[in-house]
Structure formats: structure tokens, C-alpha cells
View 1 (tube, rainbow, N blue to C red):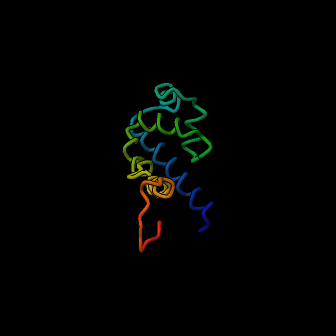
View 2: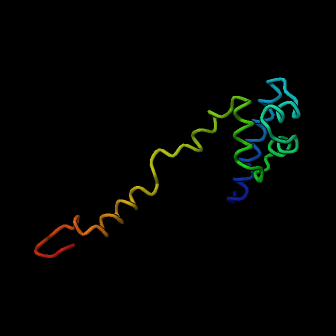
View 3: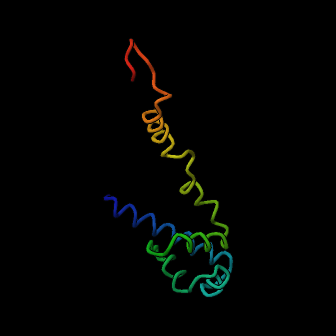
Length: 106
């Protein structure tokens, strides 16, 4: 399975989850759209797994349907991915933090 197929399958699965939650909540697409502050067309596209719908809309609809917590592991960044890089850059550029080894400044 290529990356594109994996993304398409994941998006389709997300759409199915949205639709299932909407139907279980007894909401029409129009009512869900009104409550979330998005268009009916956006809800329809999300249910089809259309990833061109903005992330903000996905989050708004997910919040109304009680699905927001299910997406959290996807969005949760446990640590700043640039923290180590920034620390290394500061170490390299801060002359006060250089170590002396065998008479050489490193």
C-alpha cells in the first residue's frame, strides 16, 4: 500500500467515524453543520473522507459529536521536536558554554 493509499484509507475511516457518530446522535448533516458553524457541504465532504476540508472544521464537528478526544493522540506532541535542535544550536553559539578538553576549546 502506498502512502497515498494509506492516507486515503485513513481519511475514509475518519469520515465513516464522523458519519456514524452523527447518525447515532440523531443529527442531520444540516443540524450538525449549524451547531458546528460549518457548511453542510463541509460536513458532507468530511463524511466522504475529503482531507481538503480545513482542520478547524474537522475539530469543530468532532467537538459537537464528542469525537475530539479520539483524535487527540494524533495531534498531541509530547515534546517539542525542535527543543533538542535549539539546545544544540545555543550550545554551539554561546561562547560561555564551550568546554575545554586537553587544552582545546570545543
